[in-house]
Figure (cartoon, rainbow, N blue to C red):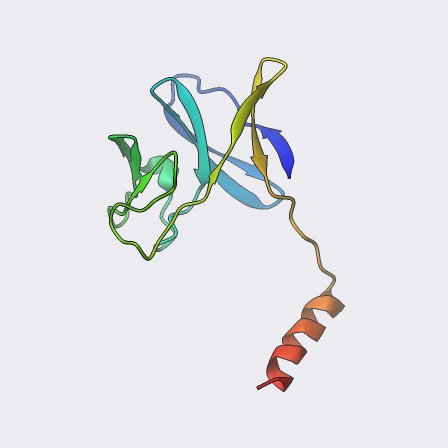
Length: 119
């Protein structure tokens, strides 16, 4: 895990941040800062553009609704939103996100080839 700053709201209730090629949505709700994946797990809608209602984010594309603290989908049990822990370090809000695993092209191609030969 690595910690990255979430930025300042500057009057906003939602915005996105990017780290290591991944995007995250940051929400300020009831005085708390909450961070989730930036895209809806249903069809990839931009969650930071959604509405916050009753402690949940409503995706602007298909209205799938996710609890901001647990990631539970209130619309369908088939989907779940990843939530990330936020803490304060030296007066700055930071979020803990997983470190991206980098693989070489040869590792990717070998893994792909193994998948085809095992069928």
